[in-house]
Length: 317
Image (cartoon, rainbow, N blue to C red; front, side, top):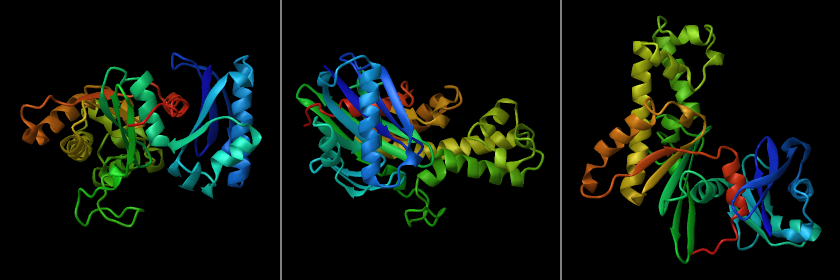
């Protein structure tokens, strides 16, 4: 028996067939933009799920369950996608609509929870009993996974919207100074442009051809490696903000492992993970005598959400 995991993204809908070893053996996808309504989108999910099974060379009867990762609020008990930002779901009865076309067990969960479940069972957290995952992208997604002999505890958080700078940068959530306004990839690019405007001599200008529109999350790191002082100052400030939020998470949750995903997390370990480990240790000294939280990079990339969604039928505690 196999499971199907579906990742509902803003650009693509991707379905993967996941075997008993938590490996993806076949995929199918479709552009999300071809669907205008929630009901049409669910029809597309069924279509790509069936395509993935066909590609794997398996009969539909071999599918044990289908899990769907949704970028927003879900009510799995009711099988409803309550509200999403990048998909046309608004109190959409996803399970009922899916099962009308294919009568199989269907589970729903937030996409950040699916990602931490995938990494926790098939990626960087395979050997960790309690881990958190933070994705540094447009915003900051956060979730945690605890594993016991009786099942898993899986929970998403809105930790990106904890305030770390009073009266700070306005956030789309309506507050000011939210952590994601200082630690997301979007924030890093904004801060890089601000630093470049203040330092016309910086090598960061050469790296993006003098065009602020070409600034990326790597611009400051690359310039820092080349010895640029302005870039080093900015990068250290960014890492300090990132460490503030991570230290808060460590002090509150005490995870054994923190997994970082998203484009920023692909930086060289000596530029990102190593300084973060030291900064967070300094900010969590109140936890003396407690084993330090380990920091690692995500391993599965875009497959984490698919694998995690496929495993949503696991028992919960």
